[in-house]
Image 1 (cartoon, rainbow, N blue to C red):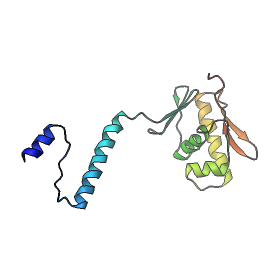
Image 2: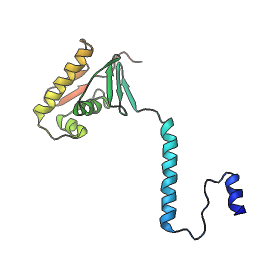
Image 3: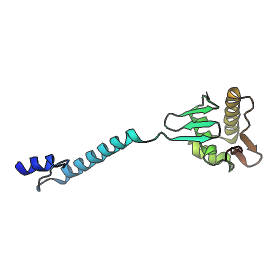
Length: 147
């Protein structure tokens, strides 16, 4: 017992006997990883994407444009996420469906994009970042005034 107490006082986190079972060892390792993850989780930065005046929080599933919250459905949220991850690149309707994890027809994607535009235009009537590339899909226009 004296060796165990001395080791713990000197900074050891745990003590394992030589005859430990594999199940107990695995349970202790899993618990250790859980503690490490919990400790690092508090210091982890929020996943926030910013594209010019757009702020997109993955952790909170919130979107704002020029400081105004834009209320999106889950599908609309993932469509925007797909577009802003690749600003300037055309994303096909199929790619948007895949990224939003929905199985719908092309017209439904078109309807979602129209609603997304409408919601952003309610926040800012001059909103023009969401382009339609006819016959190909949609594109998020990159921020031109960033340097």
